[in-house]
Picture 1 (tube, rainbow, N blue to C red):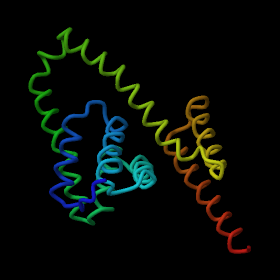
Picture 2: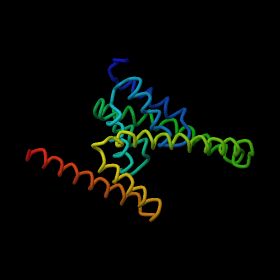
Picture 3: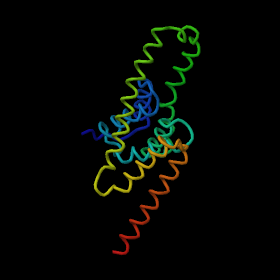
Picture 4: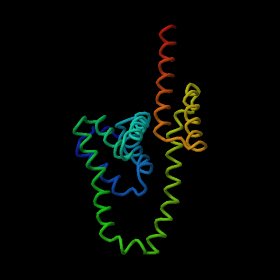
Length: 189
């Protein structure tokens, strides 16, 4: 078990490495953040990462950038947030600049196109793993109301095409209501 303490430099370097070597966007990077900060370094818990991810998804902007900034803030305050922001944002900015420069060459290259099709297939599997990993803590006996929220949110998005922002706000409101009801029951006992 790693007992190292978080530092701004370490946070910057870890987020830089994760951001630089992960292709596929935020939902692919979340398992990488979990592996590094929850499983390896033990700087945060799985529940904390799930909460940071949920908040990051509901805020405007890229989910992984938001989650990284929140992670940095959670660990080291404003300096940690800035360290995580820079570590997460620098690689895509450099890579996108290079892609823009070479766009005419790579846009029509059949090998590049084939590579991206293969990566999309792998990314789909990683995203599915992320969904299962984030849902697993709610599959406990005392978490039944949250399972219904999860299933309802899925149905609202998949079958009815309801806007994601509406689903997230409604899910948060339901979660707060459930928490208030549980808190009220525990105080009356």
